Structures are given as C-alpha cells and as structure tokens.
Length: 355
Ligand SMILES: [Zn+2]
Image: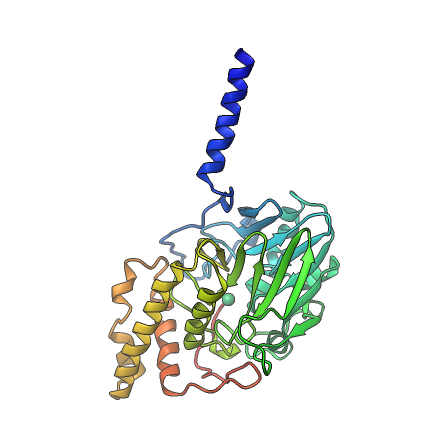
C-alpha cells in the first residue's frame, strides 16, 4: 500500500513537471545577465576567467552554450556569441564557434554531454564572437558552412585582420538566387533524428547572415539581426542594414510558428511575437531620422535629439555608444540606401564596429 502511494506520488510529480513545461523545453539553466554593467577605462577582457557553460536546453539533443556574465564589455549579458549544439549518434553539428580565446573551453563544455565527433559547423555571420573558433573546430574535423558573402568578408576583411585560413568556410551558398524565395533553405542536414535547415538571410546584421532551423525541436537560431540587450546593430562595413533587419523580422513572422523558440546570438530566448516591438521601434526611429535629415539636420543634431528616449527604460544595455551607433546607421541609411547586388548592399562605411 505504502509502495503504491509512493508510486502514485512519483507519477504525479513527473506529470506536474511535464505540465508546467509543456514539452519540457526550452529549459533555461543560466539566464543572461541584465546589468547595468560598467567597465573601467583600459579594461582588458580576462579570457581565463570566462567559463563556457550550457545555458539552455532546447531539446534532449540540442543545447545552447554561452560565456560568463559581466566580463565581456561587448556582450556583458553573456561573453561571446551563443553556440547551439545538436548532438547524438551521428556526431555534433554546431551553430557558430565563439571567440578564438573561448574555442577550447567551448569544446570542453560540449564534452560534458557528448563524445561524438565534431562534424559540421555553420556560421550565422562573420563576427569574431561567432566565427573566432572556426579554425579550432575545423582541426577537430568540422566541415564549415556559410553564405558565400561571409566567406568573402573573411577572405577580404573590410576591417581588422584576416583570420586563420583553416577557419574559412568550405561549403557555401547564396542569398537571392534567381527564382528562390526568401526563407528557402539552402542546405538541409539530416542528423541525430533532426532535420536542420540553413536559411540564408537578406543583408541585415551583415550581408552574410544565416539562420538555422531545427524542425523537430521547433527552434530557430536567429543570430544577431535581433537583440534584446543594447540597441540594434547593423554592420554596414560588412553590408548589414537596419532596413534589412525589418525585412528579417518580417521573414521570421512567416517562418516561425507561435511556439517556435527563437535563439538570438545574445540575450534571452524569445518567440516571434517578441520581435514585433523591436520592429515597431526600428520603423519609428527610421521615420523620425528621415524627417530630421530631410529637414537638413546634421548627424550631431540628430544624435542630440535623443530619439531613443522612449525606449531607454525598456532596453537593457542602453549605453550611449549603443544608441549613437544605432542612430548613426539610420542617419546614413535614410539618405543613400543602395540596391542588393549578388545578395549584398554596398553600405556607407562610417561605422567601424566591434562585434
Ligand atoms: Zn554580430
């Protein structure tokens, strides 16, 4: 009798936790930091102090990893760029490879849950916090995939130095091929019972963006065209654009279901409805900057107008640098917005960013 009650109790506990979490996923183990953060002048990132840990479980065989909170001034909410890892008997598929200084720690973190061979890496975009570990993981045996534009950005960088040639993607695809609708997967990988689509994006965060859809888990890694820590960042030097980010948000509205988990490269997990407020802000700021610029205002005058003020209270990480970068990009875009040629726009080159 006692045993029967215990068993019933155990069943009830399991049922309650399953109910509380729906399918049980996503499970956030370590939430991103919220700040505010301050770093003294001349601060150097203490790479040796940064840990790579599993921060979210998206499915039984799909985890996401991120670096420690509060140590990386570019991303104090979680050091580096988030890495998604699909694992199982067929080996490991990774989305992005972190900063070069964190690559070995990323592998160590992966080895806490799988011993499978590292087979495939797909890069969501060029920035070093997403591709810096490429050469390291290529040496583990990974074949690296990306948009052709990303490969081009890596081989002929518009700023910074060329990375290790071993980390240059070897399998590439394009956005905007004739007759191919936006949102169409360029590559589909069947692995570990999952179907993974690499979907090239329009020039948005950069001109070489890819989102990665895990169909069975109902998860899309949406990289950095959306962020919920700091103001939007379109890397003009690498062909990104704020207007392209609006197109990217609109495409996600079509590709994602209401319950699809979206993984930004930084910040918290979201669903597609969370992107709508971001879209509204982009449209609002574009309209206001357009009006001021049409009225002959200089960049300094537009920056002084403090157009982001209505959003500051609800934007985490709203530093002056993050605001000014955003407004400067919009200011440049509202005057001369070039057409897409070969999946790329030749954008104004005023802003030389860090990640
Ligand atoms: Zn980025």
